[in-house]
Amino acid sequence: MTKSEVPKAPKAFVIGWPIEQSKSPLIHGHWLKQHGLAGSYEKIAVEPQDLEKFVGSLRDQTFVGGNVTIPHKQAVLAHVDVIHDTAKRLGAANTLWFEGDKLHADNTDGYGFLANLDQRAPGWDAKQGAHALVIGAGGAARPIIDGLINRNFKKVTLVNRTRARAEELQQLFAALGFADRVMVEDWDNLDPALVGKDLLVNTSSLGMVGQPALEIDLDALPTSALVTDIIYNPLETDLLAVASIRGNRVVDGLGMLLHQAVPGFEHWFGTRPAVTDGLRTRILEA
Ligand code: NAP
Image (cartoon, rainbow, N blue to C red; front, side, top):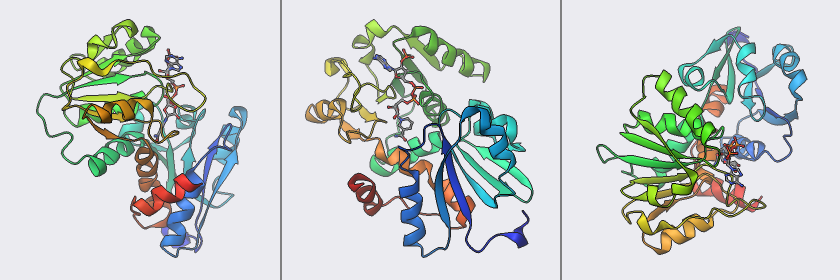
């Protein structure tokens, strides 16, 4: 598609398997309406074996781009023309868009994580030589660690039930030149590992509705630390509730989901949308 062929009502998508639970159509639908834009954003269930065929047919289907979620974030990179730096570093993309005939891919999850903290806890990254503790080493941890390194966190300590998975991430960041910035601590040492930390992030699925609780004793965490959970169901996880009571600043995970959607919307529909309280309420009501 060339610039002169940009459609009057651009069509975008989110693909995943399963995809039913995706909140992305609500987010983009809200912004399309708010800005009075003609356009659409639909969720499409794509099985792993159909990914190549689906991506190959995007031009024929006149899509301007879309989002990619689990389980396609890594695999999609094999089918695009241009992989932007963040997606290249992380080996995963969540946002696709056409520039001319070329299909571009990037990863906006880390951007979403950082933008959420920037909006809800201004100045959170001001300290020089800060040290974060990240719980979990799954798909979501990767862009978050990348984001923290980019914001000049001196150290990021990873604690994951399966230590080998945390070590894999450590090696990935060592290969990117950050061997001295990412450390791994045993799951059994989670509580003592909180000593001296400036930021605590839960990226594991513990504490989410339907999942086991995150068992953690925050006594050793400085009350000056910021605590954030990327889970947004419930919006206030037990971790955030307990942290808040003891005086820590807390930020919930909904904003990460909302902010990661901003760059895609701008690519597809030509307007940079804002993450507002109105949008948060719309998603929470749904
Ligand atoms: P994932 O790749 O499946 O990783 C899950 C993580 O949770 C792993 O570190 C896993 O540890 C840990 N975990 C799961 N069950 C556990 C248990 N019983 N005990 C200890 N650790 C356990 O998932 P993900 O994509 O990283 O997503 C993680 C969570 O973040 C999900 O709840 C997801 O909904 C949420 N999320 C939110 C956003 C947002 O925008 N706010 C974005 C992405 C994800 P092991 O390695 O030991 O299995």
